[in-house]
Image (cartoon, rainbow, N blue to C red; front, side):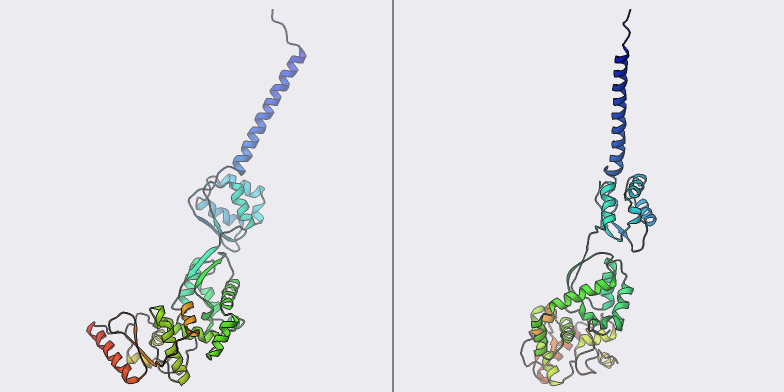
Length: 350
């Protein structure tokens, strides 16, 4: 006959079973919380999550769901509420990494730890082109940027007018947060402009009789004329000679700008009749603003222009994109005749 277990043994067994059940329960709970907080959930479907200014959690959640940014939207929503992210939505451009946990993902969003946008550019023909480029990289659209550029009251605070404000933008590589405001965007660009215009460079500009903005305006013409940087100081010297003598600049690129037709390859007499303050065949001195965004090399070439006696230039007839320079009209006419003949031979009419 089997011996009956004592009450003490039964109690001990009960305690062991209870402990095992508690451990299993705690393990299950821990696993539940681990998967919801620390388990991988972010997919590799998108490289970035863009949260626009003014968006709330419902909007962000919809984007995350519709674009398949996480595998399990239910656990994401649960974690977001428990981490109180729903009241801490910050706009920005957030870099996504496949396998990120809900906790890491939500913490990044709640703290606004966005990845900066790199804005790298050389030169642009017009402010509209530049605004379109910047607007494609930032939350701010191109029309908003143009509105600020065309606001006399806004650009006046930086010492510009609506004609010359474009010189504020200097080719370089910049980093901005995607949701940077237009005001902060312009403030940063102006700070870079001011850093370039050191006291020494301002003194250089004053020594040649130009303001920093005027240096950039002339540099834009030099840049439009020169294909090769090594010709820039020579071209700058030529135009400085004309300015000092009170002779019209007669720069073909200003006619192209005035015509707003950058497909022109051959400037004709009809272009010289365009009624525009940018027509340097019609008006003496510099135009009111730049005809393109000048490169840094062009600006430096004006500040350190070559001292020469040239007054005329024309493209070489070998189409090398280099120029023949002349000090006299007679010499220039010979050079111009050779180039016009080459254009005719290649049937370049416009």
